[in-house]
Image (cartoon, rainbow, N blue to C red; front, top):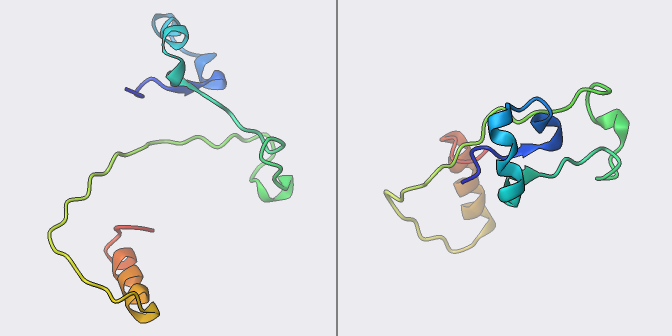
Length: 91
């Protein structure tokens, strides 16, 4: 559904075949936010004038192969987080 979603900057170089879909499918129009829009410190935002581009977005579906019961203790949650980070489920 979102395969052709683009920002206004990206659409400026878009092929003419895709131009019409942005008016008929408004959900494909991505909002660009600037440093000012998010009230960020420009010194913390990379090279001046260098836009950050998302190269790839992946949809990941997790399938449970096992389950765990946790008591909710900090130690168990800490161990679970370490395990998820170690096997690259998160982080």
